Image (cartoon, rainbow, N blue to C red; front, side, top):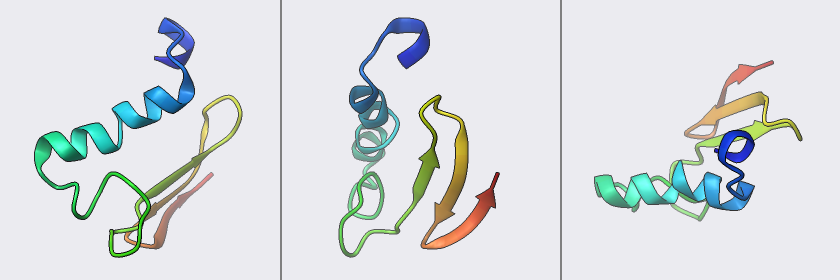
Amino acid sequence: MVKSAGVPLVDAIRMISSTPAGVMGIDGKKGSLVAGKDADIVIFDQDINILTTIIKGKTVYNA
């Protein structure tokens, strides 16, 4: 979305995090980084290449 359609990065991140979590009714546990949620995080570089993935606070992928 960012590269192909020119969507601002912050909007693209919202499209793949808080919006779907809300639609699926799981926004109480997923979709944002706040106390009490699952701590699912994707860390990427300036070119949006995934470097690290953390699920429920545990690293599951490191590039």
